[in-house]
Amino acid sequence: MPPTTINLPAIKQLSWSITTSYTVSQIISYNLALGAPGLQLPLTFEGHPNFHALPTYGAVHDIAVMGLVHRAMADFLPNFESHNHVHGEHFLQLKKAYPIPRGTEQVRLKTTAKVVDIVDRRSGVLVCVDIETVEEESGDVICLNEWGGFVMKIPTAGANKAQVQRGQRTTLYPTPTRAPDKVVSHNTSPEQAALYRAASGDLNALHIDPETAKAAGFPAPILAGTCTLGMGVRHVVDAFAGGDVRRFKSVKCRLSKPVFAALGDEVRTEMWKEQGGRRILYRQVVGEGSQEKVVVGMAVVELSGTAVDGKL
Image (cartoon, rainbow, N blue to C red):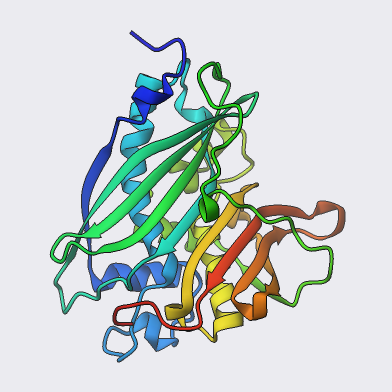
């Protein structure tokens, strides 16, 4: 029988796990899907001594486990309809550099998700899902994520009236009023959207099929939010860490509006340096003047003065 209210204590007892794997080819495809130049060999050539995955690669593993969470939402949220669930906020903390497989070998990961908070947003709720990804062979934690999903048009009885504050996971930063310290632009394309679907495993038709997008109320297919997030973090790391992904610690952002790669949207990442360059506030926008819209906002990347553990 479908639930009539939100039983948060019971929901917090639930968990979902999935085992995934990746190869060198998938890392290369992911890096290219975020706009990495083909001749930037540390991102595109597995034989380069500094070959590595871009720091937001951990969000790919979220997509797989969030598929399980999404399918289960009808069991714990009243009046749940799948089309009313959108990715609204994201936090990612990198604990260890992504292991690089040799040749055609695969790295196997176990990713586990748990609901840690459900917050009343009047027209629906924010569902906060904690996600941990562990390398199976070593048992090392690779990354921690928190996926914030807005679920609209459901009764909010039983949800928390205010969000439980959990440090970096819940801290959003207002956009500074001064001019940005750096701005980087990227022209999206239908090919990028298609490549990201393949690289990430996010095969939602909304990201590729015009008819599906039209039925959802969009003028064209929308770019996956994790792709827009990944591009923004790449721009920050390139601009303020010289491309050294070992300095990346974490990112937190709000996904505000869709990007239409099928229409060739140009995404501008506007960045502000704080704390001597260890904290970078940023937002991503498309359009100019009265047509400007924020697609990722209230965002922050934390950088360290030293490299994270692990091989590049």
